[in-house]
Length: 328
Ligand SMILES: Cc1cc2nc3c(=O)[nH]c(=O)nc-3n(C[C@H](O)[C@H](O)[C@H](O)COP(=O)(O)O)c2cc1C
Image 1 (tube, helix red, strand yellow):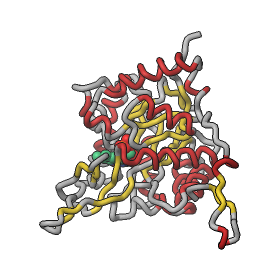
Image 2 (cartoon, helix red, strand yellow):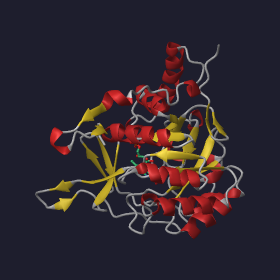
Image 3 (cartoon, protein in one colour):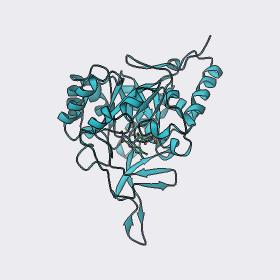
Image 4 (tube, helix red, strand yellow):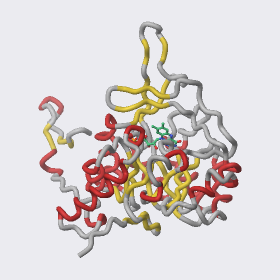
């Protein structure tokens, strides 16, 4: 039996489960000299807003012990140029891969306006709604920290876009589950988890932040265990497919996310140091399926076995011995 790497995000079929993460791949043309964007199951462009954005002051990135901080501030050409300039959407549509357009806005109306315009662009297979950017003082984050705002936003975009809608959630909340459920209730076809974790770096001698934007988003290996937990939690509590994101460096990391409940994954920061990593991972996934005797990626999705009773511990006797799951 021939194994297949095909996977599904609702009605959208991907030839393999590896997508490029928004903001780490440009719009494809920036990486062409390293890797053919067509090898990916899908490519997600840098966030697009209604009007062009200049982004945050320099410096915009800082390397940490096990990942990177960025405070790009969503620099992008705006929706008009994105649709008409040959180096953006027209070029993305020429690749043999699924084209996902990541949108960011300050108001529901801005997202709706962009969704309406992209609905008539047949090259666009899916929208990914960035409701989770940590570097947007104008409020990009506000939707993604409130379930009701998330539901209303997704619902409004749903009314104006006929193909796949993915809601990209922030990990910077106390509980991701109500937000994930709200996006699902609003009509999202899939969820992306996670965007970056808010952090900062300082230079103590100068008493200065390392980033021009002061705080930034942490990505890379440091966040993988955190992201894995949120993907697992969302998969336990939602019916729609999940795209796992956060610190993926190799094939094993991808499989961890898949077993925890992701139907596909996005790779981000790793591409800055290993721009051809997608090729290696795609080959590795084929080998892993053969090793497991599995016919498809779908057979592995959410197959993590947990024994909830075994992880229940008794709290200190003085508080009555209430039983709580470890880590909650
Ligand atoms: C330099 C940089 C820029 C990013 N820009 C965006 C963006 O424009 N929109 C967005 O939704 N996510 C953006 N992200 C977040 C990534 O898409 C991804 O969610 C995050 O980096 C976690 O994945 P990773 O650890 O594999 O990098 C950016 C990340 C980095 C490192």
